Length: 278
Ligand code: IPD
Ligand code: CA
Ligand code: CA
Image (cartoon, rainbow, N blue to C red; front, side, top):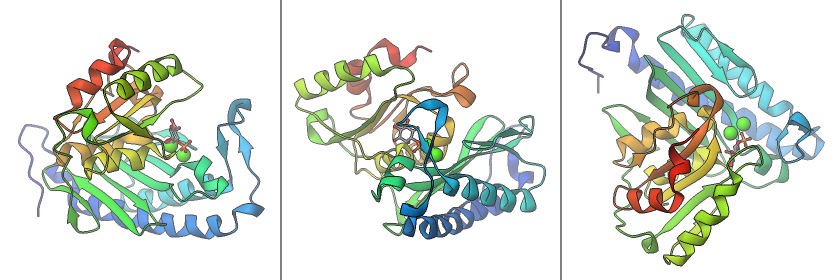
């Protein structure tokens, strides 16, 4: 399918299709590279960011991000970047790639299989396409505005739940900010007969909402590289999301709720006003 977008700044001239194909191919190639590191993870030196023992990183994260950025720069030299490990470049470009080379690094270093490579593209300030590669489960989630969302070749659709008791909600939190909102949310969810799960990868949990595997996913504070690719999938699969990009969300993060349409309001109510405050 060829992408057509209405409006004066329609990005047709930007060659959306090439960028979509590149996102998918490079995410999968980076995921294969990640598997090489994963196989010898016990020999990797694990470092801690900002003295936080829970915020881990290894040479694998940096190597994968360098690889992804080099591949994208070669094909699309005019595009900008936001990446977890290497920071930002050319933020005034119309196309900005938003990259998490390994989402779920804590899982990665501890031998848990829920980690992935996430590559999203923002065009003129709007999340436009994304690819999330999960090599342990041979799944490539991907979506482009107007073209639907898929896992491998299977179309994705958000869950049909009308009440939180009808499915499972993914959750996450951080020691950095917002953790005080976490336990009250869990209490409210359990009181309503709901249930939660945390797999350690915000990108995968966002994709799972698009896939209808989870009815929702709430994180008290998350970064754009964790969720931008998944947000396109949720939109294309008929799900809803909170206004993640308000304020400094793109560069500094915000709380995030993504959910099936029938339970979005209920989950937002259980979270309360902190969902929309900075
Ligand atoms: C983290 C994961 C985790 C979420 C954290 C993120 P990382 O990313 O997505 O699920 O709870 O907020 O920082 O550090 O593994 O790339
Ligand atoms: Ca991440
Ligand atoms: Ca990461």
